[in-house]
Image 1 (spheres, helix red, strand yellow):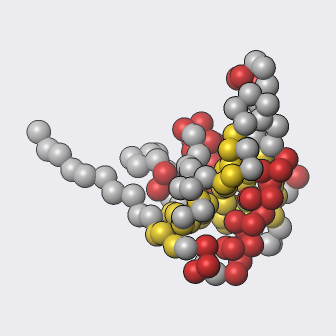
Image 2 (cartoon, rainbow, N blue to C red):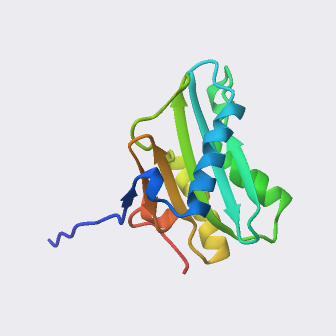
Length: 156
């Protein structure tokens, strides 16, 4: 039997250390939480997806009494971007979350379904989508969605 370790590359920065374009994308994700509909969890998630032409599309989680009928912020942003800008490449996604009026102390990462859906676009465009996860105590930066899914299948 052979064993190996899987590592995930994560850069950790303070918000104040971010490049201006990354800080702006985080700000858009934070603002996107205002569009969340979260009457059951009181957990408001926002995502901001930047495309290769600089356009930013925001998404927010949308809950429903029939829980499976709701959607996450990440899929809300990416499906809207793909439907309205089908020829654009996704370059970066930022995600922020708050409980009530308080943003999370530590960054949150996308759920498994969102990771897989984002990976589908990364595979489709054959270019990585950089991931920025916001928390009040720091921002986690990953070089690609594939970083969130070690041992995933990729075509590029």
